[in-house]
Length: 286
Image 1 (tube, rainbow, N blue to C red):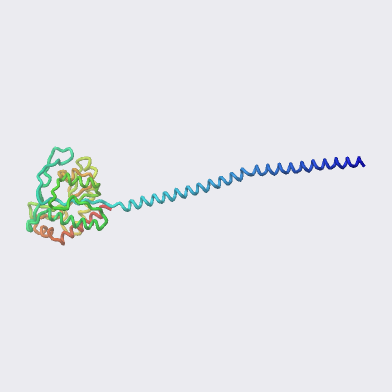
Image 2: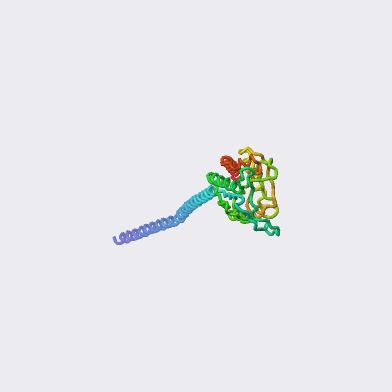
């Protein structure tokens, strides 16, 4: 009996050890497996997070670029062209002198006074101011920013001062408004004067001034129905030689011609002149 009891006890000890060993082994395997798979899950999760972050950043950058492009486009659309209108002459002469060009020793008077109607006796400055103000209203109705060198016939400015107004405004165009005169009463029609490239500034603006001058004159003579006297380059005009922006001077007809004198003093004809000039400017400056 004692022998059998010892055998049974021994058997139970062996079984117990085996069972304990089995659970220890299972526990070890389970822990090892969990430990091995954890980094893989973390790696996948991290990669996914980074992908989401990148997508979010890309979308944000794209939206910012779109916003920036929109601002630039809106800014471009809102930028308006600046036109400076310079009504020629004043109700009195200005015999003070100023340099013909920057650095020039040649001096010219600021304003020798304008012409006068051979029949109506209307002074040129009156015609110039009237057409200038009509042109201003038309250009503003088209959305242009319009600056005047002066708005009163009593203001007698020098040509350097007139040019500096256009330079300060960084104008897209300065248009100088004049009427012509000749010793011959038969001469008629409109002409356009533009700067000759005699210095650094006029070389920079001569080509564009020529294009603007031709375009505006073509529109003017076509719409008004007048003689085309062409575009002429000039190197002897102070207002041209001091300009840093495109500039033209239109001679709208001859006050020394009886027929054109009467027309130039007519409100209806002045409206036609202003409309022709406005149309030409629109064609030239887009």
